[in-house]
Length: 422
Image 1 (cartoon, one colour):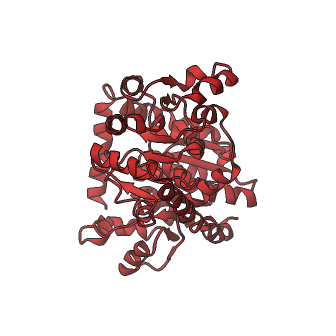
Image 2 (spheres, rainbow, N blue to C red; image 1 turned 90 degrees about the vertical axis):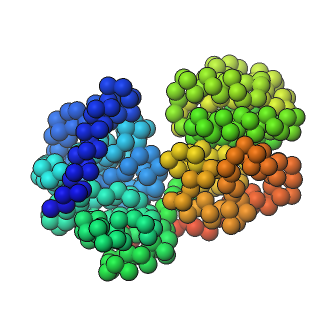
Image 3 (cartoon, one colour; image 1 turned 60 degrees about the horizontal axis):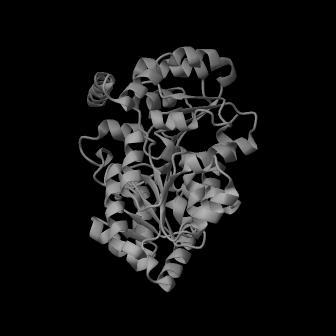
């Protein structure tokens, strides 16, 4: 009995429920799971024998998405259950067209896991990156459901590789096959006796390369850029915004134009960006109501200024207009997607919390990434690339090459999964 796992999970759920009256994210987590069994029961006839894909949030979904799309291309008749742990993932992808149904992951206990299995009888399951839920995985194994972990990353400090990690190692044994992103992760798993593991690569490379290949333009962003240098600040948090505002101020007349794309559209953060970022500043929602020709005639002639994007789902395509990108999250829980920018041939700057993301060090080593710890370091990094066209051109080429050389993971994964489907 995984007592520690159950105690930790129970304490986490209790903490979220206690925080719900005062915390919007916690409230969304709690409220989103209300009525989950009624929804699943209603959809059960369409979902019976489905492929179940589970992701923590949006970032993990973008890793799993190429696999799901490739499977559905071969098996368009296959029903799909897509679940998320976080409210942000669910809200962003609740209307994903390839899924028969999108919902939250039922809380991980033996009763819920068995209930899900009895209701839907999935014929295969895909978990993405580092989603480990003891009872769900144990139940899938007991019912002989082929279960795969894709784009996984491991490091030696994780519980799997220590004396107290018995329950964690048991979860690894529930997978039919584990595809790791890198050789080091694969070696760690082999070192504790796992056999059904191989290096599959990171499926995000396929996803971002596909987006970049489509070259779907955004006229408003193109008009704003004009012929001026442009910095796109993607998925930023307030700490990132403060750092950026100081660095851009330090650059003075050498500052590039800036497109700011907060990770979450909270009015408080939007207002702070409006107050701090270089002027003239306009909101996306205001400009999109205007005449594009007038926008091009006015904003396109400016050499400085900021565009604040208060719309979702634009960032991956906005990077195509950037000369340099700053990617947020590196001063909080971890950086957001560097590859979305790099796929367009855009060098990236980010904060220090990037240990879990191999691409961060990879881009640094390639000369297309820079880690900064302060306003002074960010100012220097911006000067390095915006002040030296030759250096910027080299960094841009290396960013694009880094992504292109690592595509193909999806095909490896799907080759193993497809024969397991009935």
